[in-house]
Length: 615
Image 1 (spheres, rainbow, N blue to C red):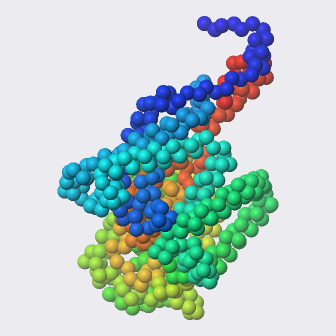
Image 2: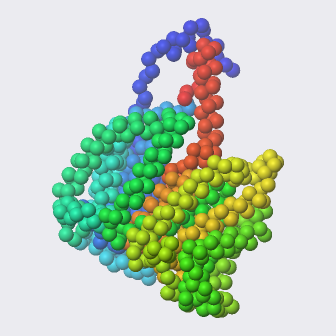
Image 3: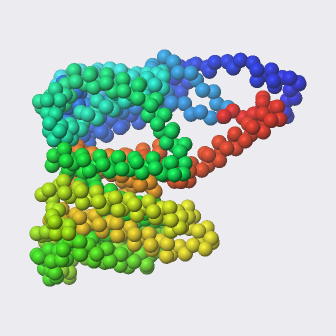
């Protein structure tokens, strides 16, 4: 039964001042949420510690002598738990409580309980022999948790540290947007400069700035605490002063249309290209090798982005095209190929690589292209493993060398002027950069072509696309072929760079890592794929390629899995998503927001402001 409001009541209610949001302590309002968050944090702390990650990462110093990377991994969980426990879901008709001192108190309690997992682990390690059931942890873990002191000290100190770190996480909710942004910028800058010490030192040596790095870093690694304070102050000032200008420039570019927007994008592309051309000239072998490895995975990810990101075909055997490109280039250029050794120039062999890989793409795709979803993924996974086993088999060992592979592969000769090989990573990077530019241009043109629109229609709904007259079989086959060709470029460069190819270089794990790069960066987004390769491959490393953080080599698959889980829950569209893909994933939310906005406008037009839904 609806109550009838007297005339003028709605207007008076709308004109009345809105009371302030109620404040109520977090502990009293949602103690179950606090207990649940603390339990998850404690389990996460124990899992991280027993994986032996803190001990292995303790060798890398962040701020000397205050903090190492091993201890930093143990501090992230209490901070995240203390910050997250005060999170409020804003729903229509649900009161939102103003942030206050209760946020800090709740964060401190949650952080202390989360760090209590380490206190419990310290007690267990001191009183029980856990070496047999838990083989990954090191005996040095107990000493690390106790800071070289007794077990009782470890129990107390981690409760205090967890409370302090959790309180700082809750305090972040009391800060204004500008202050919070500056604090995050300071933390990321200090940690990033410390973690990327090898890269910074390598670049500084190439530019003749060794004196700067000598002042910035300690002799045995890590930032000096004075340098860290100066770096934090500079980062905070730049975050406060430069944020408005950066946002203004970004908004100015976003509102541009037509030819003006095209000219702006072209200028940004030229600026980025010039930076990538100039950077290797001042970099050492470490940086150039890192850039070359990232470029190879960018090429692979761009090819898989067409198959998965644009056409929506879940291909788990993409490493097959990488392997075909590598072995074809090796057989046609190397003199040590067992049976066939025409010793072609690399550019001539590349033509055969493209043709053969395209035929392999048709051969793999034609029998299974009518399948959809998980069935197609399983079949492509099988084909990828079959290709590797064929290269490994004794049946084809006369051509591909079997388990011995093909060695002494010459470098990539470019018009007879120079030879690109792994001994000169700078030349390898320039070659990779040229092919990445070609792949980016091809991907960009295809995405905006009629074929690209057909791919995206198939990705959104294959049944509807077929009803609209799109030949889905041919369209999906073309996606397979184009993706295979781009992947073969990376394979041909890889064989010339390494100088040898073996079947063990093309495990199914390579396909999984490339797929993770595409998902993490943003499916269907060229810029996202490049960013995903730089972050994952450049920092953590590939399946067998070292990254900037060599200490993470045995934990990178664990980190890949954690990033995928977080990405699917928090940002399913990826790190830098394409606009179209983002709209697809958030279509229901956008429709709901549009409906609520329409309801408010209708009710306002009718003068019924009291019954309008809150937005």
